[in-house]
Image 1 (cartoon, rainbow, N blue to C red):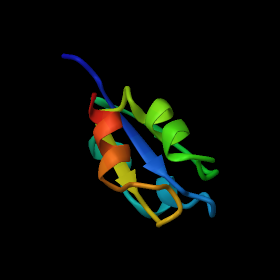
Image 2: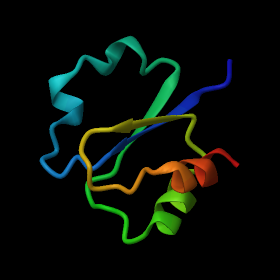
Image 3: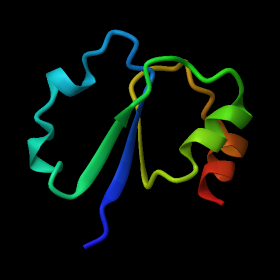
Image 4: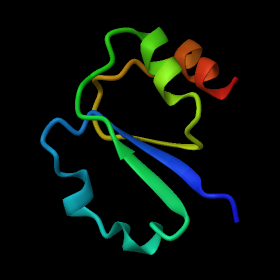
Amino acid sequence: MTRLRCAILDDYLNVALKVADWSKVTDRVDITVFNQPFATAESAASALKDFEIICAMRERTPSRGPCLQRCLT
């Protein structure tokens, strides 16, 4: 089975991995936590292009249509 990749965005308090029980998915999902905001929508799209799952915790990462579309292509 191919492992999925999950990006957790804007976890500047470092709590994402502590407040949820991720053990239910870690056998098939690789989780990467991004603590710092991306400088631009382009840098976000570039960093996130290989993730199948994007979990937005806060509003600091630009996630309007054009940025999301770049992540999907």
